[in-house]
Image 1 (cartoon, helix red, strand yellow):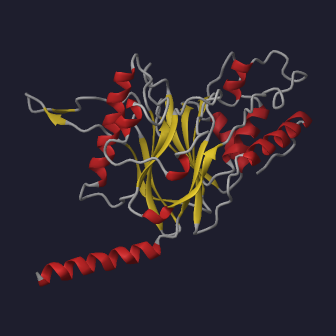
Image 2 (image 1 turned 180 degrees about the vertical axis):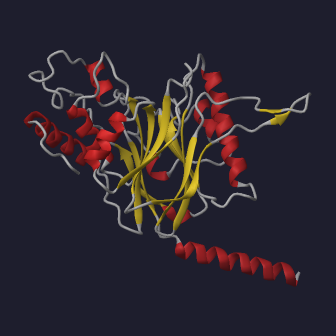
Length: 334
């Protein structure tokens, strides 16, 4: 981390922020053994508001939070990448980013989706794409999707240790009703299920995350996205996993379509950088006109959700080979 030549109030804020991060108990990852994943909706990241970019303090705070993880899904990255580059400079030379194009229409909100990663811990393996909606043949012979995403999910394949997986992130529409949201969530569930079982697919492990605009993990919206095999990882099933500042909505999610059972461990949670006190990070002496609402445009109105995955799956890979072999021999004998 390169917190160079920061102002004294930023240095003080970083000390406060580190104490808050410590309370989240983000367990250190181990090379070739585990990785820390996170998903974070950084509110309108890159937007210039009232003629001003995010403050230097906000850039250093965002970098400090991101630096706790090995691979991060960034939601609400905007078309202007200037602030992202500022954060990358603070993170240092080992960090890389993959990002989608932006949608220029009103529904897309000029947003991108991105994966930020530490190349020492995780590497891309080739696939980088936006997910396209399934198409059906119409009356005139043209193939068209019956339903479209407001913002196309973004995915990339990665390797950490002996674990290969597809990381997919999405920003699901808010819409004018939960019914419209549920349709898009079901479309996402159907798309992942179809891709996992497609014979042309190389990776069977899908980790799906992002801002799903789901209020909880029990209602019809959550059921819509988990109807086809995506599951909430065990460490994220408990209480206190709400990611809005009021800590009463589970808008952000991690869901896993797992090929290996040995990847999950008992570590995960939410990083509460807000802690009901934003003035400790942006003191009135330096930011006299800042309100709580403005604070959300400096950091965010969402908190990062994280989980740790074990990446040494070689033992389970060998077991699966032997199981397949035994099944084949048994079939031949009968």
